[in-house]
Length: 433
Image (cartoon, rainbow, N blue to C red):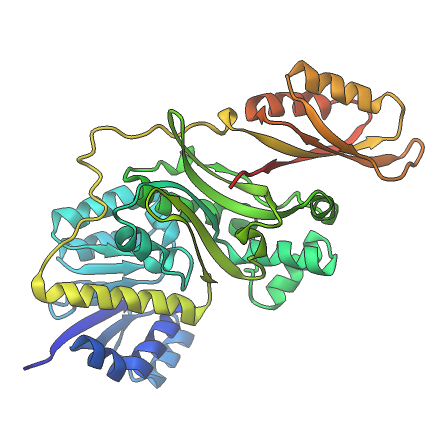
């Protein structure tokens, strides 16, 4: 029997692209043996002269115009790894209209422009695969699209940014402040020179938008996602959390609630006994609650050339198995859905809160803070004040009973205007998982 050949075209040769080429070259015989299909990387589009020289050493056909890949009738799968919204979006749409399957790791593009991309794929009888967009080597997309397809997903909690998780882990384990941990992450290559997307929570928000789309079978407007990063977290917050029986994690959350869905990204206090509390360093993890499986945790390396390349190659194999049958399984056909669940504003969130006030050490401070909290029906669970420094700023740590986010923010706005409050209050939500 003649072995079928699947031709690939790769647009963008960076860290992930290099890993993909390396895996395909090293594992080609193994893949052909298991699949019965020969996978051939026919052409790579790259304009950077330094990267072009690297490609030449790998004996790969190089072009500087992506159209040579997109319009090549022999290429079955287009892999987009260039990143960014434009021109990546235009390349993907053109490839789909040319009846080519597409693989991408472009989380920002899918989160913000995914509706048009998936609609175009459906109209042209092909599919978009994007395992590498969330969680690196963790097969979370495939698990949700295939393995858990019969489940009704109730909630999903993700530690899905290795940079932020590394920073929080190092702060906690080595008793260093945020800036020192960030510099260390940059030196080790775990954080970008400009780490804004990672530490601000935007990267997590892109990823949870993709996961929520699959879990709840509906479009997600990226602007509806509440986003808060770890920029304001200090070492003292991690220490206080430890004393209270928690650790601090940046969580991406998508869950069903009465009357709709919550989709949000922010730091959380997680009970130390929970599985997510033990996910440290650059590792990612996704914790799922569903009606059939109950609770499940998927964990692994969330970034890096080889884990992410593993996800891309997995998508190649999935498509290669479909091409001979020319079948399209539309897991993201949400256009026909008549009713979409509303994304509930974070203002309606009901949970416990941790506060760290920085206030002058005066007798009336606690009573005035408590009075404002009481005005907004916020009940205090506990108070910690370690040490006294007369007429100097000291931390006051509070835990509340359940309260509504809208009331919390209104109360803090008033408290932060008090003359004895010397820094903006740190507020961290306690997440019941």
